[in-house]
Picture 1 (cartoon, rainbow, N blue to C red):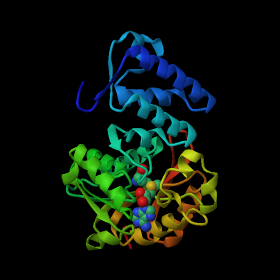
Picture 2: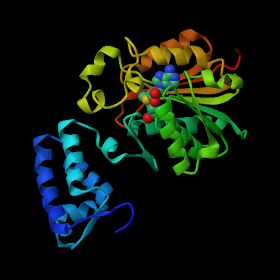
Picture 3: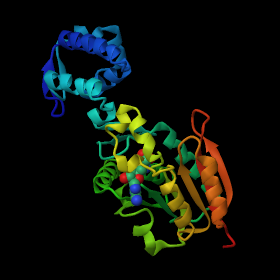
Picture 4: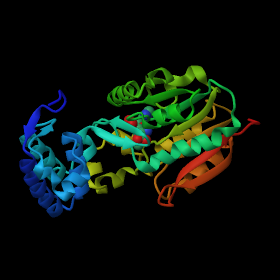
Length: 303
Ligand SMILES: C[S@@+](CC[C@H](N)C(=O)[O-])C[C@H]1O[C@@H](n2cnc3c(N)ncnc32)[C@H](O)[C@@H]1O
């Protein structure tokens, strides 16, 4: 036993539990891989042990929750469509294991691309102590990614949700990055007004789903992820429009403006940037599936 896994069952009992849970998963059209993930988190059992059935031969297996509570967790996944990341409290993103709760969006794999684009675009800036903003930080994923990839930069993470900021702070502490990131509650740039004109980069994955599409999202998202993280207003562009209109005052000349959008939105966002008149080098990039999702621009030097 260890302090994080105080409950014990026999390997045979857990094997039988797994077989039954797998049947329910198949009926509910949930991937058995999610069940294996849950058992990995709760019991520390590897996928191969489960799939090959060797778990049966182990006399004792220690669990972080009782078998009864494990059953309730799996029922929440199947009946209430609760995302597995909220059930386990963990999401894996880039090299990080992040704490998550229903107060924050579960960070998505495609958002990882933002860090690579930011780093590739920042090569022209060689000065130390650069300021970078992660606006709408949620779990803190982007801020943590930037802090790791840009080791001398000062990262400023902002969110309107206090609960989200508390999770983001916790993630920074767990990863030893607290001294690299400030966390502020507020509306987009508003808490950062003292640093106007000084930011080398802004990275944001703002809410961008058109309001009327929200009820049609898959139940895992529509029922459980925070509406504040999803709802982008009537055309989905409310927050993106705000970031286009406000960021030029905060970015230094040549500074980087970089966002994630929904599929189909990049041309409209690129138009907004062109029309605003203070940006240049507008560029659209695809996500891991080849779908255009990211828009990059530089704050014009001559403004
Ligand atoms: C799509 S989530 C992104 C979370 C995280 N950055 C990620 O990529 O996983 C958008 C975030 O923006 C925050 N947000 C919404 N409106 C905001 C506002 N007016 N000012 C600051 N943050 C806001 C939400 O609370 C949410 O955490």
